[in-house]
Amino acid sequence: MCEPHPQEKIDATFRNGSLTATGIILGFSLNFISLWVSNPNDWSRVDLLPMVFLTVGIAIQVKVFADLLARDSLLAVKYDRARRLFLIGLSIVAIGMGIALLNDILGLSSMRMFG
Image (cartoon, rainbow, N blue to C red; front, side, top):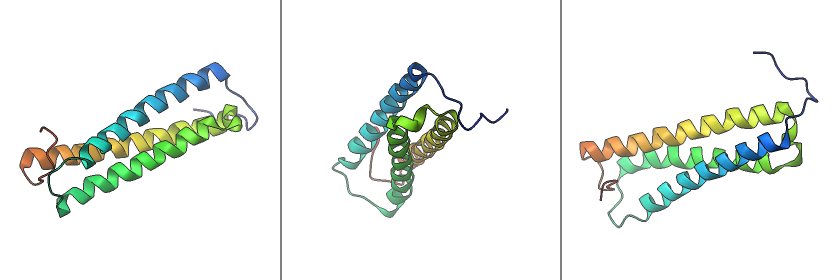
C-alpha cells in the first residue's frame, strides 16, 4: 500500500463516520470497565493484568478520539495514523476483556463477568 502525500486530505464526511464509530466503541469500552470496576466482589492480584490492558487500551482510544476531533485530522497522514492507533487500542482492550473472561471461566478471579 502506498503512503499518502503529506498534504492529501480525506473527505470530512468519511472522517465523521470514523469519529462516530470510534466514539461508540470507546463508549462500549468505558461501559465495560465501569461495570467491571463497580462489581461488589473483592479484587485480587489476578485482576490487575486485565485492568492494565483495559486501562491502556482505553487511554489509546481516548487519544485517537481527541486526534480525530482535531482540525488537522482531515490530513490523510494523520487520519491513517489515528486509524492504526485506534485498532491497536481496540486490540489491547479486547485482550484485557479476554483475560478477564478467562480468569472468570477458570475461577481465578472473584470479579465475576457473568454475575
